[in-house]
Each structure stands twice: as C-alpha cells, then as structure tokens.
Image (cartoon, rainbow, N blue to C red; front, side, top):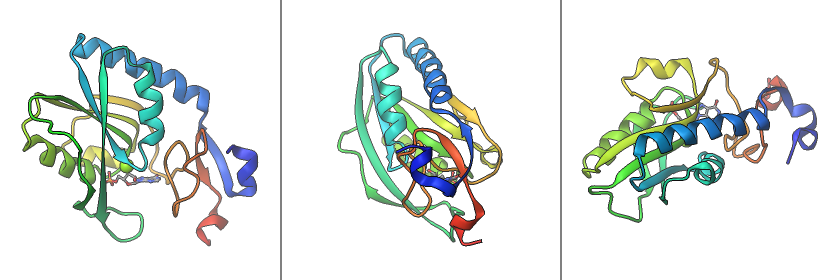
Length: 184
Ligand code: IMP
Ligand code: MG
C-alpha cells in the first residue's frame, strides 16, 4: 500500500520510507554498540510495532530473539489512561535476559511506564526501549527512552504500523490524515 492507494485521505507525509530506513540503520548500530555481542530479546508491542520489529531486527547484527506482547489501554478516544490490560503476554521467561522493548510510538508514555514496571518485576538482566517515534507529551512521564528514531510534533499520525480505526498501518511512511477522514 502506498500514498496513491489512500487517495485524498492523506494530508501530508511527515517521514518518508527512506528516512525511516536510514534512521533505523543508525538505531541498529547504537544497539549493537550497546550490547557488545550479548544476546537481546526484542519485545514488540502489538500491533503497532510489527513494521519496526521486522525492519529494525534485520539491521541488528547482534544475536536476537523475538517475543510479543499485546496490551490494551483503557481510555477515551485517542487518549490513553495508563490503565492497562494484558491481551497477550510474553511466551518466554525474561528472568536474567537482556530485554529491548520495540515500540512504534510513545505518546503520553503511560502505556510504556506501565509495561516497564510490569517487565521489571520479572527481573530481566537489562531492560531498555527503542521507539520509532516520540511525541513531546512523552516528556511528562518519567520514562527514559534509550533509542528514539524521530521526535515529532503533537499531531495524530498513521502509517508504518500506526493506525486510525485499524487502518493505514501498512503505509510505508508516516503521515497525517485529512480532516474529512476523522469526520470533520
Ligand atoms: P501512550 O500510552 O499515550 O504513550 O500511548 C501509546 C499508544 O497509543 C501507541 O502505542 C499507539 O498505539 C497509540 N498512539 C499514540 N499516538 C498515536 C498516533 O499519533 N497515531 C496512532 N496511534 C497512536
Ligand atoms: Mg504501540
């Protein structure tokens, strides 16, 4: 799927597929540098992180394994509340394991801080975070993000795993939607 397939739904492209690819290459180099050959368990947060997981993992030279979590954050509309429910838990035990959470976007940071506390209680060897996108609101929550692809403005974006009402995840770039899509 590309821009031409969603016609007038798109307002603008914020980050092109080429920019994402180049930045993920840099993040992978940072990650290799940090772990110094120690195996990493990449933990993707479904569904948004599927693209990031597929692309980032293939750029990392260090030995990695993959696992997935699905969480649902109770909230009103597009705002998350920080009250999180596990829809799918990890398949593996992370005790004494180097865990790297792979995220599509950190917005309020509430989901992530809950996830961090939850995973930390399982006593991994290390626990770090890589995200493709981060919004300024994330700064309000005390979450230190180790690898950030792009800091973006506070607007709703779709593509590269991110959806609006379940759609647009498979766009290869990150963009904003035209107001009519939201029923405006
Ligand atoms: P947080 O708890 O506010 O950080 O919520 C993070 C989650 O909300 C992300 O994993 C996304 O699923 C969703 N989200 C936040 N901002 C956007 C956006 O701009 N587009 C699509 N989904 C978003
Ligand atoms: Mg997510």
